[in-house]
Length: 211
Image (cartoon, rainbow, N blue to C red; front, side, top):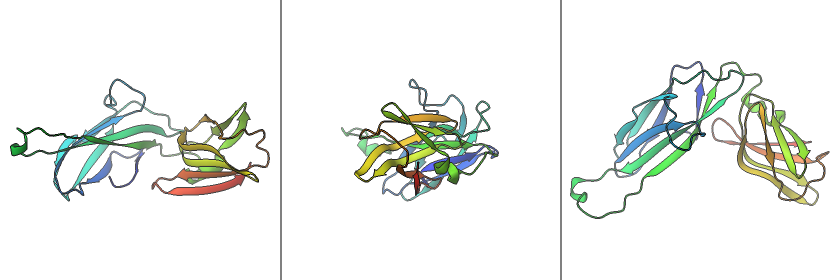
């Protein structure tokens, strides 16, 4: 897929996603979406219309798919999260169908951020908006903004070394998460935070600030 995530503007009628088969063999591809909450089914019960949903991709060929949101009304003061799943299965030749073979289906899963048109602040302000406080042995991270904070890495930099706070996680908008430090933390006053967030383009953005 071109890109590592899908940003779906709420005001858009549809979003186009580009796929490309860089292999030397054809694949059958199936596209599905889900909201990350249902465990009994992968499909998001009609939240998105996908065109096409199943197709064949020839070697070194590309394919465009269209996502159209048709689900229920979503909050307009924060992003909503869905997932795009595309499963690829090697296309077999007629001569191979009678022979024993192991066929592996590979599923890739990427985030879809449904983004309302008028959110306060900018996505780039998220790192500065996050608030940190001690909650027992854990650190509470509050995100008052409207964007998901996709955290690649977070740590405290002290005179005795680095204390890991979190890796590969997210803090939802208008909500909070709790992180367990790799070493005990007794105070955040004056601590230096190093925060690596992932932006809309899948690139790391590094922020260092004193708490």
